[in-house]
Structures are given as C-alpha cells and as structure tokens.
Image (cartoon, rainbow, N blue to C red):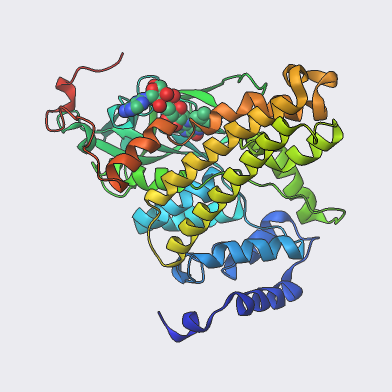
Length: 418
Ligand SMILES: Cc1cc2nc3c(=O)[nH]c(=O)nc-3n(C[C@H](O)[C@H](O)[C@H](O)COP(=O)(O)OP(=O)(O)OC[C@H]3O[C@@H](n4cnc5c(N)ncnc54)[C@H](O)[C@@H]3O)c2cc1C
C-alpha cells in the first residue's frame, strides 16, 4: 500500500469528494454526460484500479463514496446486474479486450446487462447446465434455454455460462461468455410472479451468435468465473433506489426515468427483504403496539436484523482488508432470508387477514401484501438457503462434503435432467 492510500481516511475521502462535487456536479447535464464525468474522475468505482476507471482505493471507499454522493444529492453510477455482477466479474477475469470494450458503458449505464445462468434443469446444480456453445469460425453458436433471468427483456448484453466441451468433466467443460441480447437467435419471454411483477424471463437461444473473443477468463474456466459472479451476487441484498427529493435538473430527471424504465424489475426488492423499517409504525398505527405477542415478535425481528447487520459489518471489514468475498457472504445472505421471513410473519400478525388483500383495500397501498408475497424470493435468488447452508457446512465448519459422483467422467456420459 502506498503512502497516499495509507493516509486516506474516511474524513479526508469525504472532503476530497465534496470539493470535487462542488466544482463538478451539475444537475442540468444530460445523465450520460454527468456519469461520464463521474467515471473519468474515478468516483463511479473508487476501489477499481486507476487503469480501469477507478482510484485504486481500498474496498471500504466504495460505500463511503456512495453515501457521500447521496448526501450531496448527486446522481451516482447505475445499480443492478451491470455494476453489481458484470463489472466486477469482467474486471477480475478479463481479458483486457473485454475490459476495454465493456467496463466504461457499464459504469455510465449506457449499456444494460442480465445474467443467463439458471436453466429449467440446472439451478442449484448450476454446473449441470446443458446450454451448448460450439465454435464456428470466428463465432460461438449457442443453443439452449435459460430461465429466471432478471431484466433480460431489456438487456443489451448477457453474462452467459454454457457448455463448450461435452467430453470434459462436469465442472471443466463450461465457458463464460458475453452475449449480445438483441439478435434474431434470442427470444425473451417475461414470466409473471405471484406478487404481480414480471421481473424475470425465460430466454430461448436458438443458433444465437457471439464473437469468438467474447470469452470471460478462458475457455473451459467458466465454473471459476461463475463463482466470482455468485460471490458478488450474495452481497446484492436489498437494492436501494434513492430519489433526489425536490431537486430538479436534467440528470436527476433522466435518473428517475432510468429507475422507472430500466430498473423497474427491482422495485419490489425492498419488499422482498421484509420492510423491517415499517413494523413499529404499523403496530402503532393499528393499535397493536401494546399487544405482548406483537411486541415480542417485533423485538425478535429487530434483534435478528441487528445481528445480521453486525455480520454484514464483518464482511465489509474483510473486504476492506482486501479479502475476496467468501463464506461470510453466505452467512449474510442466509441472515437476510431469516430476517425477511420473520418480518413477513410480524407484518401478517399486525395486519391480520388484511395482509392477504390486493388493490385499494390492501394495507399501505399493497406494500404489506407485497412483503408477504415477495419474501420467498429472498431465500431462492442468488443460491437457495439450503445451498448457502451446504457452503457453510463444507467450507466454514469443515463438515464432510456432500457425496459428489461423476466428477471425473465426461459430462456427455452422465445421467441428467431433460
Ligand atoms: C428473484 C429471483 C431472481 C433471479 N434472477 C436470476 C437471474 O437473473 N439469472 C439467473 O440465471 N437465475 C436467476 N434466478 C434463479 C435462481 O438462481 C435459482 O432459482 C436458484 O439458483 C435455485 O434454482 P432452482 O430454481 O432451479 O431450484 P432447484 O435447484 O431445483 O431447487 C429446488 C429445491 O431443492 C433444494 N436443493 C437443491 N439442491 C440441493 C442440495 N444439494 N442440498 C439441499 N437442498 C437442495 C433447493 O434449496 C430448493 O429448495 C433468480 C431467482 C429469483 C427467485
């Protein structure tokens, strides 16, 4: 670590960014022009290397900078699959050609992304996927089906894991690609969820094509690259979409439109995390705050949430120390599921049968019903609770691994779904 980085403190970082924002934040700029300015100064991804649009700062700087941008009322980089998954994965595994082509438009929000991992026969058992990739001259040809792909209906690019070698063992025949989504070989069909939203899709790949060099990492190394994406996904938690109060200006209006159009698939994500923040007010508003059972249940949720926040702090401290996201990510994700489910139970207890209503009669304009219907997603997306427990058991507690058969046999010889 050089002297500049050693001397950097939260206060000095805030002061430096504040001074920069005073001279540069202009709410009347077009959004893309503002974000291009933000990226050029390294503030969109401060922990990324300077060569790749960052400032080479420790990981803790990202959160400090994001909070400071919010406090200043300035628009930050976009959220979602592009900056949360695509950027970190391409940054870590390269090659440089893909870093040069994709990292800048990821940070400015000019291009949007989706994740094409899960298949009808491969979710938890992701390494068993059967979408195939065949090299044909200067292009890869892709055939298969993906499912549950958030935002695929308006994505420019997809993070695709496909099988490029059927004679290699299960985990060694996979390659990780960047695929252009807007092409004749790709059909995207939205799926309607029980909470009324249509966040994700099924994606059919029928002789879809991508350039030969659009391989993240190297051919056959797709499993290791996918694990990087999954480790980042465990940190997703509840995405926040901040408005800018009464402030106005072109950049702010365009950022608002971006949330309504591009990030609409995520509007229910705060609800899927349980909306613990509403519990006490809801109990007071309905006169349930003196009920000992309700009080006990709320206390339980708040306690779980506090403990979960400490776990997140530990994960943050590890990241700040330069460690890759690891087992504490699984603990944190599991904790979020436990809190979400407990919060939904408490909301139901407070609201009673009305938590099942939809439409104008539903409590809090439907937010409580949406919590009840959305929390199951928290226990599935990004790896189910059971899979997180397996990871914890095997990698943290050192318990015997689940019996894994056929690790060495060619994949084409294995019995499989579908
Ligand atoms: C909100 C949301 C967004 C999503 N977004 C995306 C996306 O953008 N891109 C994408 O590719 N996917 C996405 N997914 C899909 C998600 O990754 C999968 O649903 C998840 O990995 C589980 O896979 P599955 O649905 O096939 O269930 P299965 O793997 O079939 O699991 C069924 C049940 O069996 C249990 N189980 C399976 N294997 C084991 C085991 N070894 N030990 C113990 N229990 C086990 C599971 O825990 C689960 O309860 C999303 C899902 C949700 C809910």
